[in-house]
Length: 362
Image (tube, rainbow, N blue to C red; front, side, top):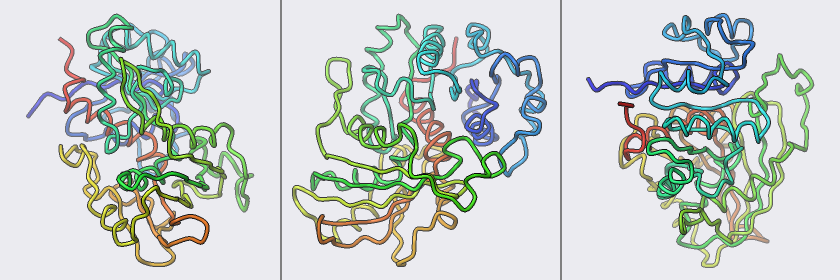
């Protein structure tokens, strides 16, 4: 059996950190050997540190219960025991940037769930099925940071996973204009209904910063690597509204799109069904076998029924039809804390390992 890579989870006590712990339990390539959080959690066992605030519906994995939580700010100590880290901390953006770069400079790869470095020119922001080529920019980043093995790679915003994959599969027809509204679960704010009773029987038509991310991040995903930097694409033109709705998990999107070259409905459905990316080619452990699933039923996909498709790592679509103002409209759905957060980051780490970017430290 191949040696498992040793993983640290920085920010391991929060909701996304807990999801990392859950997903890495029994992982065929990775083993959690370190968990770090704020100074207030440091020194406690992981079980003690999340007592009364474990948010998932599965129990805390036995293998991590007795791990003693370290202080995330003590970078050298945490980095000494791991081959790479996942980072999901709740701090100010400039503090996150500095912390992640400090870890990278120790020679430790950082796979980040945070937004701080999404627009750093030499940091790849990756949906593994869509823009694995952006990993090429890591060479320039390593040079800037002065490290041979460390780097930062980030996962994009959870909301865009509910419609960008479907649009990406249709790139040959050149999407020109996209109007999307996302209906986003409360776990996207790191909360459940116990934490946030105001969300019961309620819809909030605003999520701070979300619309800008939803409009701009797809253009970076579709951008190109030029002279050691990622240059964002100029099209399609995207406008969004992002709304918080009273569901636990799952971001649903309603999408209108016009193309430079309009496809037929049959062409769209065939491209969605047949689409595969690098994770499927490499058969990565967390990769969904069917990335995009289309539902023929008029009332699908539904958040409650369909968010866990392919273990929460697939995305789904439905209600594709021609529109009177745009070429087509459809509904998309993704699991925001699996595909959209921790699961997406685990898949990035698997891709990085498979492509040789993450290796055991000497």
